[in-house]
Amino acid sequence: MKNIPVSWPTLNNKEISSATKVLKEGWLGLGSYVEIFEKKLEKFLKNKKKFVCCVSTGSDALLMSLMIAKVNRGDEVILPSLNFIAGAQAIKFIGAKPVFCDVEEKTLCLDVNKASKLINKKTKAIIAVDYSGNLVDYEALHKIKKKYKKIRIIQDAAHSFGSVYKNKRVGTFTDIVMFSFDPIKTITTIDGGAIVVNTKKELNKLKAIRQLGFVVQPNVAFSSKKKITSDVQLVGMQNRMTNVHAAIGIEQLKKIEQISTKKKKLAKNYNRLFKNNSNIRIPNSDFNNVVPFIYYIRVKKQYRDNLRKFLRKKNILTGLHWTPNHIYSLFKKDRKGSMQITNNVGQELISLPYYTNLKFSQQVKVCNLINVFFKKKKL
Image (cartoon, rainbow, N blue to C red; front, side, top):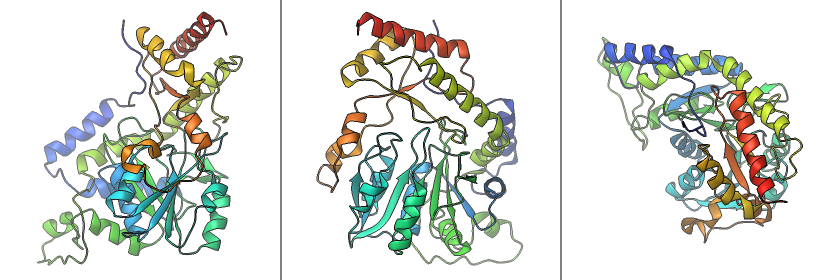
């Protein structure tokens, strides 16, 4: 019997054809398709004051966001511990120190009130992570930004591309925003990420960083009829998005409304199916404005691993998003606030199958099997 996977990308012949076209043209690196994708993302955001730079991964987008925020060695960056490890690793990589904060019980997003109590003279930035069906309390974060003007707010919107907060698209209302386009995100470029900034100065800096510090991008330097000498003024990396990835992203972006509608419907289906199951805690979201890339449930920790094993035997795969960062050996000595909620939630979470090709009958099967599991436990 075929497995029901945790996730699956929404790809078809359009993406294959677009990638094939680039391969046949031969310019595979950073080029015109990347520029087109960036402009289409800017148009999608519907804010002419925002500028987009595409890079190789969401992890690189986080690292470069910290660089734009001028986070340096010895600085501190506050972020939720309930998070993919990329954010904390980026902070370490840059020589700064992660400061782990607890999350809200209802949203599983950064607890802004607790974060405010962790601010000190070394605090240079706060990474606010949108978690699944919910977004961070950005109004509260804006108050922190107003009070501490030197602190940069980085929105980790890897979970929330295509979502809306108070009638504004995610990517348009915060200081620095990063997106991830890896294979299981709402839209994919196979692998890739993007950073959204407020000024062309920061955009140009990002474009230099992604191409080893070169001021002039290679597609300009190589294709120009004039002799161009490209200066290098800062330390950079080789983490640009390629034309192949961007071409796929362009096709994916055309489907964003279709993908968003389907993923919202799937999340609402799960919410209804689990409504009367007292053994399951579902996301505190109606999914009207949020397009998550995962759907999670919470079960009591003593049942979590056995439930996953039970579902695996029935060919239903599940995931864990995420293991709290502060328990990893690398981060045990780093500063943190109270982790009461994070410690509990980290042992309760299960990510269920959730992708656009998932059928309602498969969702019913997943939910029925979970019900069977708990009936056997005679709770």
